[in-house]
Picture 1: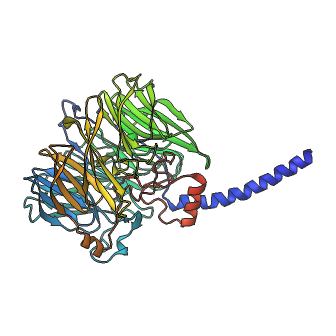
Picture 2: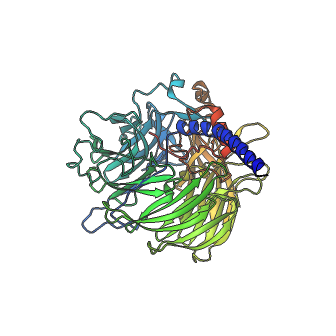
Picture 3: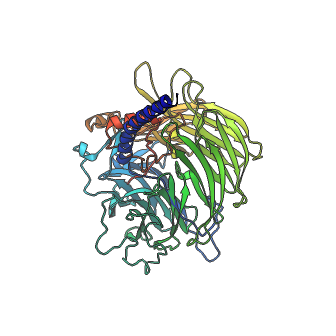
Amino acid sequence: MSKQYRESGLGSFRRLSVWATIILIPFLLVVSGCASGAGTGGGSPAPHDGSDNYQPPDDAIAREIEEADIVKFEDGYFYLANRWTGLRLIDARTIERPLMAGRVPMQGRAVELFVRDEHAFVLSSADFFYCAGQPIGFEDYSSPFPTPDYTGSHITVVDVTDKLVPTVVAEFDLDGFVSATRRVGDVIYAAGNYPDDYVPPADEDDTGTNGDASSNGNDNDGQPPDGNVGRPRAFVASINIADPNQPYLADRVIFYGDSFEINVSTQDAMFVAGADPTLTNTTLVTYVDISDPQGDVRLRDQFRVPGVIRNRYFMDEYLGVFRIVAEEFYGIYPTIWAAALYTYDVNNPDDIVRLARLALTENQGIRSVRFDGPRAYASTAAVSEPLFVLDLFDPYFPEIAGQLEILGISTHLVPLGDRLLNVGVDLSHTRNPSITLFDVSDPREPQPMSRIVVGSSSYSVTSEANFDEQAIQVLEDQGLILIPFAYRDGSYGEWVDGVQMIDLLATRLAERGAVTHRGLVRRSGVEDERLWILSDEAFKVTHIDDRDRPRDLAALDIMSDQELLDAGLWGCMDSARYRWDNYDGYGPPYYWPPYGGVVCGAGVPAAAAMLLLTLAGFRCVSRRRINV
């Protein structure tokens, strides 16, 4: 019996080896097809909870912190960063009769913009965009989409004093691809990554624009932390726009790691988080000192966090403490998940120290996180999800204050004081988008208050809000939630897009009317008590004095159906309609495999990718990334 047992065991081992080889070879191909990684990173010297309550030190001048977006509304005008047509201006001084004003065509793909002092700062990218869910390079098209004459990212500064004839006054090339931006006072900061084969100019070293790390004030030499090898590839560039007619590249630092997401909670510090290129399942966080109001930037400490993050809401800085929720995973299939909260003292940005670790889950990941001052919320990736309320008042001893089970899958959390909104996906019938209101006034006894599932059970509805947190509007002062939706009409086989209005009342939600629109809804809002809706193709204004019976007032074409058809863009949408990711809640963090974001797997043979998907149940997720 023992001999037979040994032979059987040896045979099983050989068969296992064969199967391991079959699985691992394509698995490695897939991983190599995506850029690598998980990451860790830095700290911040000034306390801030990311809210309007931030007060700078007495000897400091407050600098406003602003995020870019695809649309800005200033002094009666909408400024649009349209990926196909460049910068477009809409005169909405009389909101009920909007007029198309000036435009500036741009090379590449317009991604987002800032507007300040009668100037628009438009970021664009020379990378691909999506058409019906597939990555399309500019070389795939002739006119009107010629290949850009730059590589990486580009910033165009446009004087919009004359709204009918806006004028380009300056342009900047950034050799790498930007992953995130912020404007802090008179400076725009752009964080991103260079290609692996990037070689800095001869007059520039790997740590700063002046070629001298010490004179540039860098306390970090830009080299890998102990135990790693490699060349720096992440960067942070600063553009001074104090004189918008003469902006200039103020500074730039290049450092070891990856720029996946950033956190700018104060006017003094930027946390850049991304993959550690040589340590999988690890996040590398880099503290970048942005305290100089003119734009000089300095590298400070770096630190590693076990696990990876899904998006920028997984990290935050508050009162000198950096908080981050990270997921760890082990094995190929079935994957073992674990998630934990980590706190770090960042008051000394040159010596960041871990304070505590709070285990959250075993054998499941975390789907969504949101920090709110001394409290945080985290929802797991299970089908019936526990929602955790975390007490972070004592950063040395954080604790799970309370939890409750929620229905479906959470994709985004919105704190509202003693209430909490969960934006997610319903799993009871059609996987439609859902919104749930919770009472969290007592963190130890959170209670569900009201829930709305968008759309009927007769068809499946998707929402851009489940993929882009800026697509949903929560207008607390007006008691209104605007959530975009899209579904395919079974009668005609065409997509129906629009916005669903939901009343946000004190203790419940109430579904009101819906407004359809041409093209996937990217943004919406309310100005002068009129609902406006924006897609890449059109702009609409609707009368909503009666929210149950909205009435269309005006619509403007940004690109007509014929223009879309002539450009080969008919049916092209980077949207929930065609996304590679799914709603099952078991998928990996957004940059798994390493660097597996927007370009994850783009060059990998389909067979290898399908094998990985089948065996591991993983999907490369098209996360929201600026990529300009």
